[in-house]
Length: 326
Image (cartoon, rainbow, N blue to C red; front, side):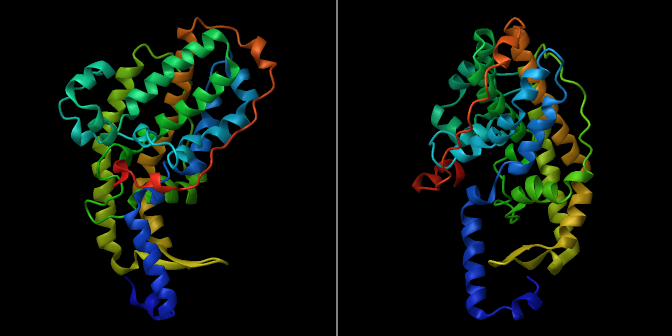
């Protein structure tokens, strides 16, 4: 820690800073926000613009609803007991799986369900929702199409984040606490306009499970690069990694502007790639579900008013400290 900053802080005030910092370290759920709300909203917005003309008008009409709903799964993490495992997968524990997709029934024969809930079930939950979305398209159920589309976008985007694929998701195993939020929120929001989000048009995916699983295997390998780069840069900047930052309400110990800039430059290519993949696979899974439903016309339900947004409470009750996040 840079002693210059410590010397400028009143001792009582410093104690508050230390307590706050410890609380964040001990509660990784508070520190993590899954791409950040801002990024999730931008991913779903951009996904709509790469859809084919057959379904683009439907999604475009409801764009504000979908954007607002894009972060609902994160809100549920604080109140719904089985929500957390849907956001990640700890690949270190799935060593018996090969490069081919393993379906849910085969998975349950290999591992006990309690373990799966701790290790993360993100990929399998995505394709459970994809099947439900296809059914909703077939039935022309507007509300379910929109709800499932926003949730699929969220979970796909989460699994395109390298730190959502490793047990060392917040650097807690390598003395790199806070790296989760640093990578997926801080450098994204600070430099969002500098990322190239041009993404190819959505495709019908013949083998979506195999493609997504292949991406996750690749993303897991990238998680090691993310951690190694942060550690190397931390050693280079030394005691200039952190600084106190203040607003009208409080001061907090944060990554320094210098460190954020250096880490952003180091990770820009990877962050750009993962944002683009989040956009592409979100749109492509939507398209695939629609095609598998028989490509129904959505004109008749496009005249139905957009549903009202219902945000779940973000009250962080006792369930927040679950085994999945300890």
